[in-house]
Length: 135
Ligand SMILES: [Zn+2]
Image (cartoon, rainbow, N blue to C red):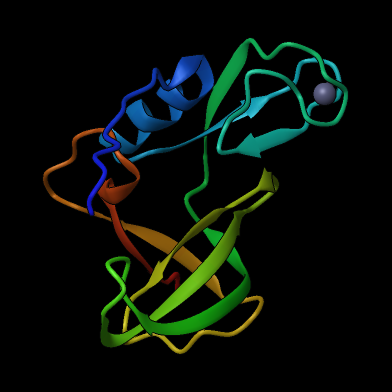
């Protein structure tokens, strides 16, 4: 038996800034005016001192691989080509993104990577096709 469960929800101020940035090929962080910490993806409130965020800034798209794993299991539960999933953190920010690494790049912790943006972007995490070695 299939149960339909389609739903939508508003992204909110902070995530909307992030998605707009992706559509423009940019990585957007929130910056706290009290403690100056920067978060990607951006937050409406500072995770460190809980102050409301009023500033959203573009950051260097170079990120560092924090950890990675390999999978052949697709979202639909079938097996496919191996995918390397990386958790990356942008330079001088907190937080991070989980995404795919391009197949030509050998993953390792500490590897500098950058996003590969799609030509046609719509304001989605899928506007990033994958990450690739930054050098
Ligand atoms: Zn703060």
